Amino acid sequence: MESKENLTKKALKAGSFYIVVQFIVRGLSFLVTPIYTRLLTTEQYGIVKIFESWLLIMVPIVTLGLFRSVEVAKYDYRERFNEYVSSIVKLGLILCIGFSVICLVAKDFVCKILDFTPWMLYIMLVYIFAEFAIMAFQRREKQMMRYKNTVIFTSVFVPISIFVSVALLIYGNKNGATDEMLFYRIGGYYIPYVLAGIFIAIVVMLQGKSNTLVEDWKYGLKFSIPLIAELVSIQIMNQIDKIMIQKMVGDSQAGIYSLATTISYIIWIIEDSVWGAWQPWLYEKLDRNEESDINKPWNMMMHLFGIISIGLVAIAPEIILILGGTNYKAAVYLIAPLVVSTLFRFYSYSFSAVQNYQKKTKFVAIATVIVMMFNVVANYVGIKIWGYVAAAYATTFSYFVLIIVLAIFEKKVTRKIIMPFRKTILIALAYFGVCELFILTYNLHFTIRYVLIIIVLLAFFFINRKSLFALLKMLKKKEKNSRVEDV
Image: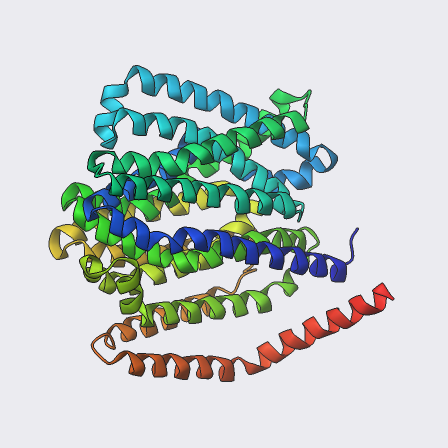
């Protein structure tokens, strides 16, 4: 068995590289937002974002969330891990073919329900399988702390998809192809991505020729089926606000709201990248019964992302102006609740991860379904009474409730609190309050806001100086030890 020090060192080295590359590549998607918002109308931008919302909801539904089983299969399959992932991708292909046949038979009905054109439906159907294969592949590589292949894929194919979509939009704008702009944006991005995903699927299926397909499928379904409710509920919570705004208010308001969610995507890029590197290390610690090593670094991560959230909220007016221009200025008052909701979602990961590791997925499913239903009702009532701004606060409050419910279930599952519940709640409330206070500074001169940011940062480093110095000392010690080993 790998030593504790070597495990941490390996996770730190591989995870850090993964985080940096993921941040750069995903940041590219964010950086082209000003191009999208200026070449598309607010209505077209809203339609694109609603299309993306449906994709995120449909992937876990159609594939039964089987990609999630990869995260724990490593510890049960060991040497047969590649064969297992190959089996799961094959089952995903069967599910996607079956779903596609149903949708094509009832094409008109499906397009009417989703507000899709036929070509949007076709892209969605092939995308579901491609994305499923990519997610299974990336989870396999991350669990093995082998980030090279997934980094290569992300850093090559995502920029290609972005480049194609932007090039087509510029071409359409110059030639006055107003009616084709939606296809240029959606088709230009997703068609290259789908081709890359199909290539990954073929590679993964060929890498593991399993003779135990039925056994592998039973294992995956047993783990994943209870999680379907969680996966779908989380995606509904993430996307239903935009869909309901489109249905209840209009495409233009959905576009404005979507830009605000895109800005909250800044912190999500970092959070998701960090979590992708953190989770394999967390599972290894749980596997070794070394839970005492988890709390301190997790507390620092909670504070770190809280500070990033405050900084993002503080400069929201400037970000809106750069990314969307004056047509999207109403989005500025949506930034604080949406950024905080993303922060709360990240905090909730720690409690669900522990339960998923112990294969107690039904508790996670119950918690997310309860909160999802609450979120839908809160969104509907809020939009009806206060307008679409209320949807942002409904989402924030729903994720706060999710933290509480998941923490309660974690104690029920483990008979103890592995992740710090009370501290998490206090930290969450504190950062929500500070972010809301920064909204009051939007009418002040931008220099005052930046001075306040500096004050908050200095206060953060002063309060957490001991933990930061301890972390630096630990890293220096590891660096020194690694040099000795090299000698």
